Image (cartoon, rainbow, N blue to C red; front, top):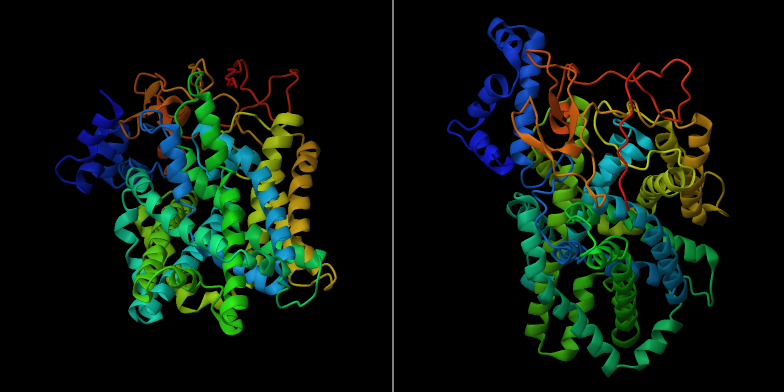
Length: 620
């Protein structure tokens, strides 16, 4: 019986939630002890049965988005091109135009462009290893972070950082849409904020299937509305290019200023966490084979770190339009030149009648806002759900956190965050850089150069230590120091250079701490108790299926661990990472491994007495 069929029979049976609870106790391999405990009111039994019900609830909802776990091959039915198109559809946001306009007006064209380039290079370089791991091993950035120096619980704090990114940029895009609705339809901004929030909820319920269709269908119209006016401006007003490069901004100084460049780069680097949203799509990449490796690599690079190339272009275009509006139309236009709806309206009005220009500007804003904010709401809900479930062992449902994320974003919009955008993004950039660069450093240096960190990513509970100081401490130190620099704790002279501190410390500290700790905090176990290869002949995660004795559902090999709870006749049983994440008692978690007497071990390697290590190394 296929996994999908078992899911349908188990989860869509009459009785809804009651059927799930019955399955948790009666049909999920919970055993007679658990049934008796439920009947007799045994607290431990009640807690385990509740955990089983949580596991089934999480399974039901994650059929569309695989919220807490590895994305199985049986679900990944899209081509590399479709995944890449869907991922790039998520960067349709108009915030880049605002960011480019803001830093251009503040620091001048030359300094702003150099800042954009500095940020793009850093984002591309650090995003590449993360995107590769997500596509190769089909896991999201939280799961990558766990095994890249943070530990099972240590990555909770990075999930909060990412969730913060999603509601900040949801609020930013929602504000842009509200500006468009007010300008075009006369809708008050406070009502526009609410409308831009509510419209997303029905679109984000059904995960990757719906998101992929939405992004593919809307991309052609979005490109048309975006590219044509910019092309028209360049052709019809060639002199605007000279005006653009001569613009010195509010600073009024000519030439290049390193402090201004770094301040501009700091704002752009707030987008570093965008790689996590790209990865939420890239984890659904098909297996890499000899037949598709060219298309596979193109999709990973273009839709992974390559997103920043498109983002940088949009920032420069936003700056260009803002300067054009200020220089050619109205010097007082700087008050609204950083608002994308005014930017495109100003260009459209030179191409067509005012009524049509207004209509197209509003359509562009609404399409862009929907394309990115379904991704923000989706990814934010995954991040909050992962963190909450790991800490509490309770799964309240992803839609609960869709509502939480959107509520926070709505509060930010109503507080008029647009007025202090540069400060918000500059502060947040320090946290985002500390996290992403730490993970990239662990992958590139600790895994591949020093070979201290296990090359194969590990994310399953029981296999990892709770907290690994290598990544966790590195991120806290780099974020703390760079934030202190950002707020002037070490003097105004170095205040603009907080991004250098964030990136530098996050790059250097992980290998230093990995060497000092000898890598012993990476793995709690090296053997998951399953005598099946983790990878196929091409080095892709195996699609062999094993039965989870908690949920009664088959899961693919990379998602499974041997359970600490044997069967009635002493036979081994297996449990999914999903069920382990909701195990309140911890009785399903395997014990830590101990070294054999006198046996030399690699850093981070542990074995049970007399138990062989099962090698499972991917190829390629």
